[in-house]
Length: 388
Image (tube, rainbow, N blue to C red; front, side):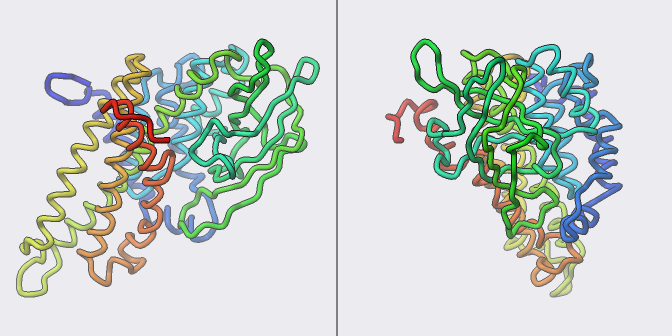
């Protein structure tokens, strides 16, 4: 991104336009229909993969586009703006693809990255546990050595898309041989591994991606299931979590754009007192405010992506948290105001907004809660005492 004029490179502008066309081909009607029927968006996912959009951030030698997280974020934003927010883009190419491409062995890269890049394979991410919540230091999923391999046991909760995945990148802990203390570690676990079970969590969100609880009961894994160095797991973990926040922001930005677009179109066309309702400041001003907040959040998202792609993991940590917070807030406001602008039609299926009322609320909770973002900013950006 050009630091002087804040314009994106021509290649990314063209990428956005092409992805937007793909998104329009399917649209929110397709997305909602699939979700309500308990089906997946496989056709859209497969076509996006064939066109190279899903793996745009992954290395070329493994089937990717050789670009960065900024380009993948642009893909997700455009699909969401077309009414097709693909949640698994946040976890499969962004988290798992990034971690494996940066820290995986050559064999691991060859095994997993081509499928992630072309959409023929999916990998999801498992860190959250029932009793740990936002406190990743309380993770109890543990790996023990078993000859040349590992035995993994524990539980995870609210894991997206397990029923669609070939494998799960699981955050666990292992014993440090030097200190005897437990330290974080990342493992690739095939979803058909003996001892690996998952159960769907019923949600009130209308989404094709489902949520699951995982149960790992002495899952035996080969030595190469461990991703990266044993002593660098924290750095490896955050190398995936920063892209997750950037993608989470793009997910929310796209939904905000979709909702705002619907509201503006309706406000221009709908006439009640002899003039379009958009002439009334009671509707026009809230929509204008949302536009301003959306553009500010988008700029911060692009800054975070630029810092990450430049190799500044530490700098991108602060920047990635801020747009994730801001984008979630503006998305919630955009959907709410779009519904209000439509009046009763805002909750009619025909207008494509009701499905987003609960879904958009997810942005305040995941992949990190707004409260934990505020804790981070208070401590690391403002230098305030740690509060937790």
